[in-house]
Image 1 (cartoon, rainbow, N blue to C red):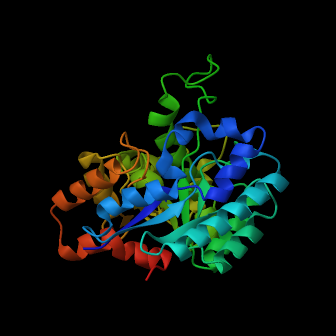
Image 2: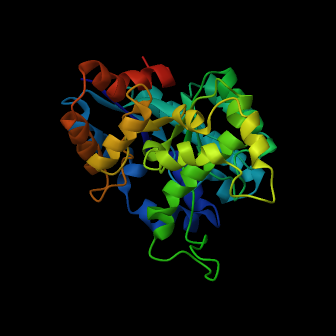
Image 3: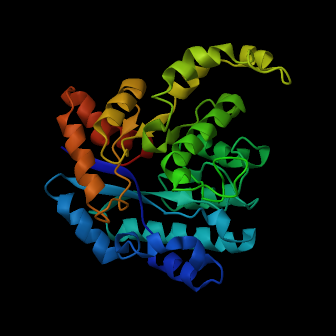
Length: 337
């Protein structure tokens, strides 16, 4: 059995060094990132991958970690970060093919040149692109971001949605910040689900019908809330009097639930078997890709890889479906040999 781990994170050395050396960005990287060597130390990352590489025929597709590049400065500075990151990713994959079989581009999404950088990254070998669920507070269905989706569809490159939410977004209107890391535990799945809904109801999925979007963490809240997404949103407009959502519903080409079924998802659910079963039941074996979200487990690298493989191996499914989830869907979606 082969395992292609399609969604986990690493910083190329050049980008990591520049981020730490740039005034203002070091704090945004956060103590947690700096405390996980496997996200910036190549030797440590190889050590983690080697725990599974030969025994499980295991490789990784790499993308940048948090924070989003667009949160690190003005467009010109972010363009430099993106170029450095994408060139570094391409070099890592080229020099370490036994460990890394693909990479996702990162873009200066606060710059009008984001689509141009995406085109450049594709020419340099990018297998897809990672976009965060909001762009400095702006929703993804804003017109200014459409060129990025156009490039993705035109080049048959998937968009991987990564949640982005911080403690600065309070859980209650009367407070100034989110407490107890609720912004992460419950906020990130909400953030991803909200971004998916904006792509659906904001017309992005209709405008780009061949666009392929993968929602991190097994589609976030959507599988568990199938009843609300399905029969619930079939009644769109019944709860709203100040906007004509009923006309919007009639204008859509498909039932809302069917749009959400068209997303792809990954298996990175932090070692939860019930969540894995729920997500697989909703999306089916053709649209779920193996991913671990390495290296953010308590062991700082191998934990989520080991736990996710163990869960997938324990599930009752056909060999054909197992191969699709573990590597064939990644090959097809990302163009990996």
